[in-house]
Length: 127
Length: 343
Ligand SMILES: [Cu+2]
Image (cartoon, rainbow over all chains, first blue to last red; front, side, top):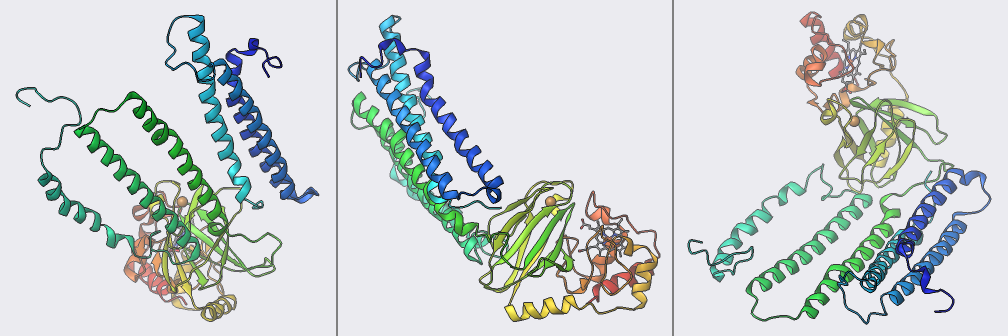
């Protein structure tokens, strides 16, 4: 893994990855269902298909978040150091950012799961 | 604290006696509001399956909240006594589990439970199903009610009172004529917004015969708080008889009707079987059968009808009916008696 994703990617961008994935997944779920339900009568596939599609999107989103969490964990030194990481050094900043990214990934993971729960229970459009 | 010895928020509790003295008062406080939970206008006294599910959700959350609250209070009391030192590490664990992991699990469970309840709280039939629908349109500040047959043809119109058969789902199509209103019968189910340009479906079932109160649950203008209605749940055969009776309009011809028509009331109000066919205000056919006046604002008495016809805007600010206080008192009285007796 180390060689595949170099440490150079560790930047503010990795910090944003997980929340961005959550936002894309959230908007994706809502717009897909809204557009499908508005056009359902003229489409020749059922809501089941939409649910499966979004279940796939959910798994993809969770996978990306887990990957981002792993990178953050690596950046944080696999938990060897304890927070608060407040020394004014490059190392301190890197560890702090890794830790923050890891926490944000956890939050995003839960948020994506919550956004996907309705897919389990809502089986049809109301028109 | 005269000697300034104790600071901070959580001072040790001096003695057990304070707590035990508090208890009777607390119990009284908790028990006193209980009677107000029943009645024909309470979501906590459900009269149908949709409302029962909502009540169940409420009580589950209430019990859960009480458990969490008690746990919190217990830990505050524990912390304020602080017999033992705790390590940073165990404090961190409490924060991680109590502050993040457990709330995440509880919220996940609650969200799933709420979602799982959805189909039961919001049952619906697809558009192409041949069911009788009741269309209710929110208007400032009253409710236009239309009964449709299975083919979607209007059978008749009425206002401010809805009759439904007990034990059978009633399918409502909710609309708005001017601004957003919201249709809410707490005893029978959740609220549903009425949005101009949209038709929102809502299905409610009453398990018990009775008269339930509904309200507008979305601020819609000056008299929003005076926009209520009545739901009467009656036996199915009684309901059928009522539908048949309302469909066959009986012609009326009385002295009161003449006064009603001569003063222009028929321009806004309809009474089937007469020349009154206005569409602006509530349909007044069989008005005498209703239990309240002016969308649940006044009791249904001759005096109150006369009072309302003379000065509607005084009783309901912003009302879309002109006042008729300039008419001779006798005319108003005659109209009021005529309306009260309208069957
Ligand atoms: Cu209203």
